[in-house]
Amino acid sequence: MGFDRIWAVEHHSLKWYAHMSAPEIFLTWVAAKTSTIRIGHGVVCMPFAFNHPARVAERAAMLDLLSGGRLDLGAGRGGTKQETSLCGVDPDRTTQEVEEALRIIGKAWQSDELEYHGELIDIDPHPILPRPQQLPHPPLFLACSRTETLTRAAELGVGALVMGFAGPESIAEMRTAYDTARAARTDARFVSAVVNDHFSVLCPTIVLDDGEQARRIGVRGQRFFAQSIGHWYGGAGVPDEAVVEGADEAADMRRAAEQVVARLHEQQIPVRPTATATFHADHAYGTADDAIAYVERLRDAGADEIMCLIQMGTVPQEACLETLRQWGEKVIPHFRTA
Image 1 (cartoon, rainbow, N blue to C red):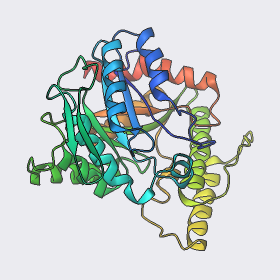
Image 2: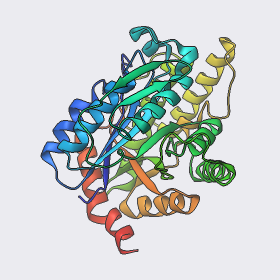
Image 3: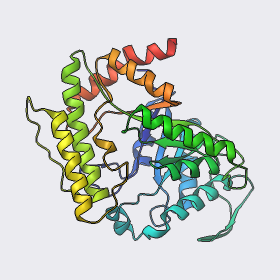
Image 4: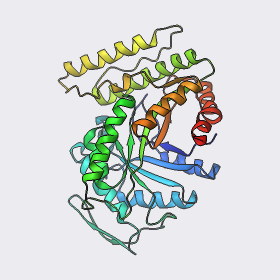
């Protein structure tokens, strides 16, 4: 269908929200079945109790070799209490550990042996085998949902993987924050000799010939997905799995957002501006023309790449597959031509 890249995100024990606990296995299978699409291993949960940095480097190199040099590698915190409690991760150290992990991976193949002595971890000289096909290593990324994370990604010299639920206006603000940090940075915090400034944006989408049906399916799936995020990240109730024919999904989405805010207030958890971003329903739902128009808005807002989010909980498999077909036959060719 002409897609450039597939991303797979690592999460653990997050029922409803994400069941991709071993993306390196899935992506190895994808690499074996394909020859051109890039393999986005992002995000890897980089805190040390999830994945030791040297092991991430070894796995990344192996996957890069098996895919013929098609790997991209992203880092994330896996910062929910549900995940950190499973693997004994110290939630107060996740941000620091992710940065140290990126530094270790960034220098793992720049000499015959890796030696690293940081604030949180010490590694005496050891060879890291094998070496990847892309030298010195596959492009590095960081998952970004807040302004401070975007600033950190720019300062570290890595690409940004951005949640795009709040819409193009929010994406434009995030791109400005990223570019402002890029303009002001020095190389003091770079994690590698190779800088990656790629800005990749998530785009929820369902595309069918019947645009109204696509919107109903997409908004319903997003409401389930948003409630799942609200449950694990904000202490909200369990997501509503029922699919009611003819329901006003936009109104249900607004009510679900209000419930999340009420729950945050009840638990005295700060309500950030991003708290209800996942309940914003104006995305690439509808016909192929609707999707093209929305992607143009994201492009104008500063997106270098669009990551299609399709398989959201309640979305039927046939709608997922038809969406991929519609993008491949109608949406992607529009931008290839342009």
